[in-house]
Length: 166
Image (cartoon, rainbow, N blue to C red; front, side, top):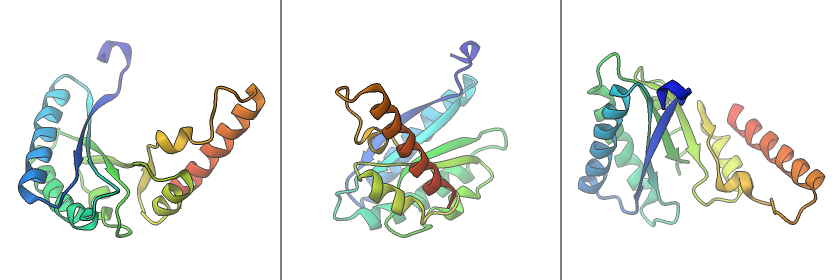
């Protein structure tokens, strides 16, 4: 992968409940694999996704933040990661993570939100940029003409970009 110019790889886990033991297990596993990815010369993208439909989403995000900070603080100076996280319920909850010296970037996944909702929530989070896939493809169809497809994709990319830089 490295010789072909691949930058990094991700592993995704889903958090459904605000369970500190479960969240610790997920984050520990992600960082353990992340260290193997670093050793292989790639950038690990740590992705513990909090389910946007969880009744405990905000509480799970708080636990996740504390747990991520613990694991980030344990990394050595030559071990950097990216974080791919659900857009938090509380605006700027992950601001401290965006400034952590072991984090090269925090990116947000759309997680099932509509593009408009994902953009609105993302714009409230300083230092976090979009890594949307579901929201990116919203409104696209193989049945569209090439020009309609391109126009829809162009406007989608522009709206996501604008939400990322607010």
